[in-house]
Amino acid sequence: MKRITSVLLALFVVGVVLAGEKQLVVRVSNPLNADRPFELVTVKWSLLAGKLPALSAESAAVFAEDGTKPLVSQVIDYNQDGKPDELVFQWSFKAKETKEFIVKQPGGEMKQAASLTYAGFMIPREDLAWENDRVAFRVYGPAMAKDVDNGIDVWTKRVRYLIVKKWYEGEEKEPKMSYHEDHGEGADYFSVGRTLGVGASSLVKGDSLYQPGVFQRHKIVATGPLVAIIELVYGPVVFEGNKISQVVRISLGAGMNLNKIETTFSSESAKGKLPIATGVVKRKGTTTLSDKNNGWIGLWGLTTDKPEVGYLGTGLVMPGSAVKQIKEDNVHILVLTQAELGKPVTYYSGAGWTLSNDFTTLESWSSYLTDCAKKLAAPLAVRVSVK
Image (cartoon, rainbow, N blue to C red; front, side, top):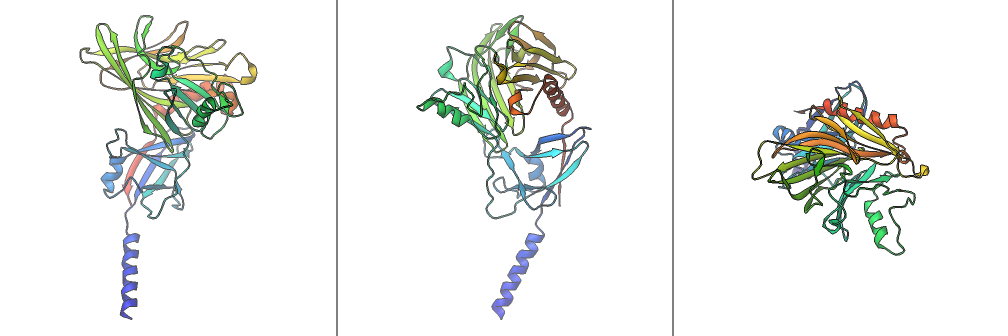
């Protein structure tokens, strides 16, 4: 009898502890009078840990209001020092909608969600490639230094699943299955050469771009399941008598067609601000698009000279008042801005393809770029409290 009473008492104590366990409420508001589908919600870990210090990055889970099933989420450690920096999850918000989410440690084994993003250093080519459920990109490494520069390549996808590893393996196996041909999943139709491709950046003076060549070192910060993040280190460029180095961090979230790009220039001798250019390479037969008020540029036209391959839109959004000038030459449409040494310049660039069924016309692509600019100008409002 004493043993049964002790067991019941122990169960009661555990029940009280669990019932009284603190959990965090993340209140997210959409300030726009427009829907935000597949939006990534980013919560600074310091806000969470400040309210609930015992929260563990390994076991934290995000729940919608009903609390029945955890959402796919990801904890990001940008500098890989073992301390989390952000918690990310995804939700679709209606115009002016406010939603509450619960962050807690449910206990037990959590089933790992299938990743919607990927990043990898591809051997033997030494490319660094990344993708999400909409589109894929790559930059070239040391093995291609004689042929290309720092331009960003885009791979068009028909499918929502991940294809980068499969396409690279197809190039290496026999019989070879070239990713330059569409086998039902999409293909690499884009040509970069020594251009900026889709959204690379460089120092600029007059009509000359001072591109840094291929990356010298790289770091894969995160692969998923919701965000892939890479960092690229480029060798120094001599600009007005000073050696200027460049570090680029690229993040691609699930459901997005644009990369977030943060590029930082540094120098031991240069001072002040530096003129930089970023942009997209022109293609034959494309229409040039731009909206300085909303801070974006773009192109729209046939993907190749074959109409059956559909149409491709490329574009770049630079938030705020950072756009100093929009400029065209024979190779690019460019956004000119200034970079303060040691501080990142942030912008967004990417592509959309008609055969992915996400975009159908020039108007749908330009509307997407406008919507992205408006969302950047009015980010989701996030508040954290303890329940």
